Amino acid sequence: MSDSLTVKSTRRHKLHPAALRTMHWINAIAMILLIGSGWKIYNDEVLFGWLHFPDWMTFGVYAQHGLQIHFFAMWLLVINGIAYAAYGFATGRLRRKMLPIRLSEIAANIRDALRFKLAHDDITRYNAVQKMLYVGIMLVIVIQILSGLAIWKPVQFQELTALLGGFQYARLAHFIGMAAIVGFLIIHVALALLVPKTIIAMVAGGPDVADDDTAPHPAPAE
Image (cartoon, rainbow, N blue to C red):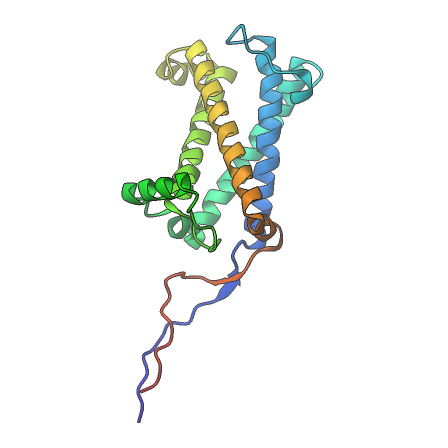
C-alpha cells in the first residue's frame, strides 16, 4: 500500500482581493489630493523663497480651498489607512508580503537593478527593495500625520509640536515627508509602467494564489 503525506489544504484567491484593490485606489486618490492641495497651502506661506508650485499643479482656487481639500483627503487617508492596516494584520498579508527585510538582499537587488538584471517575472512576491520602500512609506505617512496635527493645532498639540522642534520645524518635517512621498510615487509608477502586468493585477486582481505562499505541495505516492 502506498503512503502519502498529509497536506494542509489552502484556499486560493486573487493576488489582490477586491477589498485590497479598493483601498489601494482610494489611497492613490487621497495621496494625489493631499499633495496638490498641500502645494496650494504651501504657496500661501512658502518655506523656501525660491520654490513656488505652478497653479496648474495645485488644487483649490485659494489657500482656504486647498485647506478644505487637504482636510477631506487627510481623513480619507486616515480612515482608509486604518482599514488597510486592520486588513493586513487580520489576514497576515502584511507579514507575508513585507517581512523579512534583509540588508544583504537589499544590496543584491540594488546591484541587479544597476546592471538591469532585476527580475520582474513573479509579481506575487516583493523583492527586498520593494519591501523596504513600502514599509518606509508607511512610516513616512505616520510622520506626516503627526507633523500635520502639529501644524494644524500647534496649541492643542503643543507637546507634539515641541517634540518636532516647534511650528516651523514641524512644517519642514511635513515638507520633507511630502517630498519623500512624491519620490515614492514616481518610482512606484515608473516600475508599474515597466511591468504593466502589475497594473492589470491591481485592476483585475491578478493570478490566483494560496493563503499561505509557503504551503507544501502534495508528495507523490510511493
